[in-house]
Length: 197
Image (cartoon, rainbow, N blue to C red):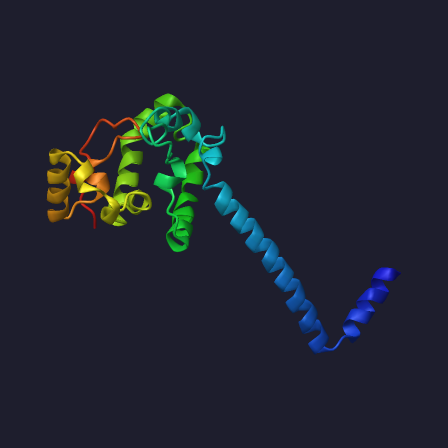
């Protein structure tokens, strides 16, 4: 019995030898785990994932996004779903992914699996995004739009005045710039009126 002989040999190994084998095996299993986690993070942070048929956004907000200023514009620079909905910084990105795991229950139970159900929950979903963006001072917006890089000379007088007023009042991007890439939801106050705790 080859299995029995191998087991007997293993029993004769010293504790040090066993520890080395366990450490090497653990190292390689760790590499595999990190590779799988990294691949998952990258894939679930892609436009391909967001607009896939296994993610309800494909038949709802992904279609609304098409043709907006974030999709097609004079500069050719696009902001895709993850640019606005997934932080780029590792810590916030991982935290967002942890929170997103709770959305799996909605997927499994079909909470927004039809256009009608999605519309019923649109305001609630938008409120979640607005709240998160207010808590992070619109971090995802600021990944592309930097205050220090905005040219006041290229802004209209009205835009300059509104930006100055917003800064003075402690507002963040999402307070005023919402409903840009997606249809504005009906049924409640916008982000400016949300109270963040």
